[in-house]
Image 1 (tube, helix red, strand yellow):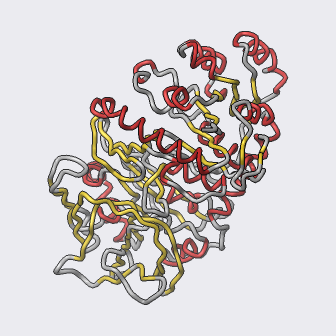
Image 2 (image 1 turned 120 degrees about the horizontal axis):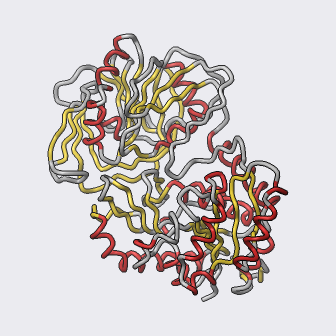
Image 3 (image 1 turned 120 degrees about the vertical axis):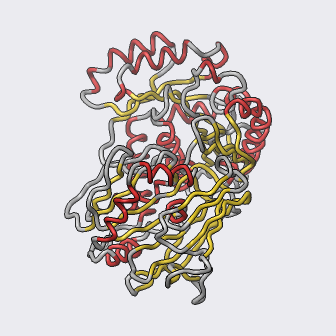
Length: 507
């Protein structure tokens, strides 16, 4: 079979792999290639739902947006979602299999590699190009055996590799040379060139180092990317706190749980120039704000207990006494209820924990996982707006038999119908929650949220439009500063490509 793959690996985590893959996907898509992003194995708590109801890493969803293609479970065949320091939920081809401890998963890697290669073969048959993202560093000696995320995959798929390093961390030449030195001869040969990321300053002062690196390794430097200020593309895992406030009118605080998930729910709110959104670290008190949002969690009972240990439950109650608002999304919604039961030990040892008792719901964690895209109508502040997003959760929440009056928060988009698990808002209009991730991505929903908090903000830009502009900015910078011609050569050196219409395409 014709191979149409190129892989981006990094000298470390957060070297710029995700962004570079997104940029290459955008560049090739603008040249009318059908491009597939691919990450063999991803470990992340931010995920997205595909049209078929599967789950993949959030970074691959952003890369798919850059490529202009619909989400596909084959973009990220293995997703690991940590639930503790030593264990994670294993998701294969979009479906949760089980929780495994690290040692057990290490023994499972042969099965995982079969799934990875199956996905790669599918993409190779259905797309013009595949741009692959590695994970962490390929030089982690303790993880080399059975590797499926970096060189283990590159060797199995027989694809060229570009190595990216972050100069902002310091020691960039040691990063690159040290990484190469720890690779096997065949792996070292597979590395075709280097990209240096996040450079600040006068490039002429770096030139002697670049010349030395090329002479030392006999491999080309494919470009030096400058530090791009104002680039706001959804992060794979790290929580982004940067804001560009011009006239803050609404203040929101988000307590950060140890197993916080899908914090990209807050990207649209954070990027609004009139919204001051602060993530609150575990050792901090919750400051005064208009609104507290409890985020999602991969281990809801443990994070709920953490919330109480931090004294945040008392601070939330004080916030409500002073007229503040509280909103819960997914795991945060479950925490607002009366109790959370995990009789099967889905996330941890079996047991039940009391929630914050702010919504009259009870939650039971189930073996089956809800994964779906959804459109609804959000009802807040006496108004309605259409919203869309996705649900990812193991729990099922039900109204308690004896409860105070509550109203449905979301209704069916096509009919004035409600499902009792769709979320609720209390009669006093102070506490609300639901399972819908991405509920505040639209300008209309943000404006309505502010009105619920007795504030007015301007209609901002649609979040997806913001993301596309940022991706174009990233792609433009890569086209300017990288040798895209050489990168194309690495792919075309494998073979001439054939596009989806059967026409010969020279990369």
